[in-house]
Image (cartoon, rainbow, N blue to C red; front, side, top):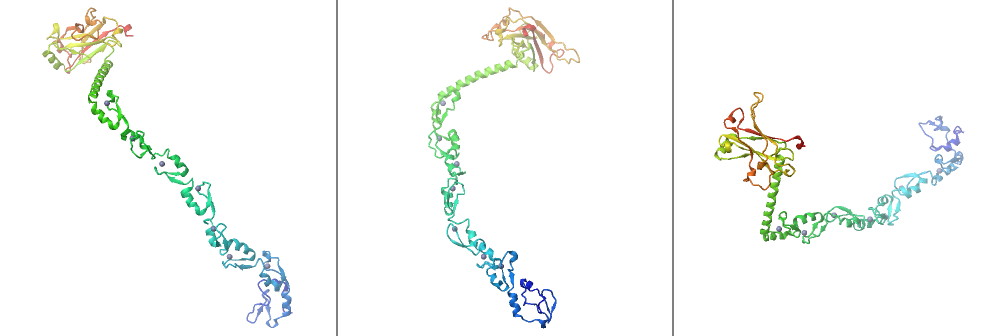
Length: 447
Ligand SMILES: [Zn+2]
Ligand SMILES: [Zn+2]
Ligand SMILES: [Zn+2]
Ligand SMILES: [Zn+2]
Ligand SMILES: [Zn+2]
Ligand SMILES: [Zn+2]
Ligand SMILES: [Zn+2]
C-alpha cells in the first residue's frame, strides 16, 4: 500500500493538510509529512481508504482552547457551525471577528452596531450613539449639582439651578458680590451698599449704609449742628440748614461771648507767663546780671535822669525770698552824674507766707573784672551789707503795694563805683558789664 508509511491517525488529526491535498512539484512529489520523495506513478485515488480516513475519530481543532467535541473527521465541518471556539464575524457587520462563545457578550455590551434602548427615555440607539447619550439623557433623574438635595429629570436642571435652587449663587443687587441664594436675605442686613433711611428724615434717597455716617456728618441738611461759637459759650444747636440764620440773628451776643473769651484767655496768658518766669529765675541765691550795650544804656540814663535798669528776679534759695537788683548807670541820689548806683529790693514771692520777716540775710554786690584770669588775677569790686531790719522794703511785701510806694525802694549803694573807676581794668569789656549779687543763707534754712 503506497501510503502505508503515513501515519493515518496523525493525518486525520492534521489540521492544515488534508491527505488528498499533497504538494505537486515537477513530476516529483514529496510527502508533506516527512519530505521523502513519492513516486507519482504509485499515487492513485483510493475511495475506500478515504472513507476509512473520514470515518476516523478526531478532536475539534479548538480542543486546546477548550472545545471537548470529538467525532468522525467528516463531521468536523458540520461541528464548526456550532463550535463555541470557532471564530466568526459579528452578525451586525461591525468588522469585529470573535469566537462564537464571546458573541453574546459582544452583541450585548460591546458591539458598536448593537441596538440599545435607553432605560430613561426609552429611545433606541446603536451602541456607539448610546455611549454618547449616556450622561446626557434629558429624562434621567439626577441630583442638583449645588448639593441642595433636590433630584429631578436632567432637562429640568438648568431651570432649577437658575431660578429655584436654594443653593444657587446670585449677585447682591446692591454691592454686586456673589452669595448663595439662601444667605442673601441675611446679607442685606449687613450689605454696605444697602440703601437706608437717614435717621434725621432729611429725605435724601438711597443712602448706602456705609455712607450714612459721612452723610450725617457732612451732607445731611437736617442734622443738628452746634453753633460755631460754642467755644465762646453759645449753646445753640439746630439743623445745619438753619445755622446761617442763627449766626445772623445773634451777632451781638456772639460778639460779647467772644470778648469774654478773649478776656479769659488774656488772664490765662498772664498766668502762664508768670509761671514761666518763675520757672526760669535762678533759685540759688546768686545773680550774675549781664548789662550789654553799656555805652548806649549809659547815654540813655544821662538823658533821662533816674533811669533805672532792673535785673531779672531771682530767689535766695529754693522756696526762698524773691529779690531783684537794679542799677542806675548814671547814678542816683548822692552818686547822680558821677557813679554807678546798685540796689536790691524784695519782690512779692510765691513762698512769702512760709518765710521769716523782715528779710535779714547778708547781701554782697560785685562788679566783675572781666580780665583774663590767666594774665592777671581779676579784681572784682565788692560790697557787703546786712539788711537794715527797719527798712520798709525788707518787711514782708504786700501784694497790693504799687510802684510809687516807698516800700518798693531798693537798698544799696548810690556810689558803688565811679565813672572813672569803671573804665579801669576790664569792668567794661565788649561793651558789657556784669553785676553780681549773692545772698548768704545759713545751711539750716536752705535745708
Ligand atoms: Zn469545536
Ligand atoms: Zn459587532
Ligand atoms: Zn435616554
Ligand atoms: Zn439645587
Ligand atoms: Zn450686598
Ligand atoms: Zn440726612
Ligand atoms: Zn450761636
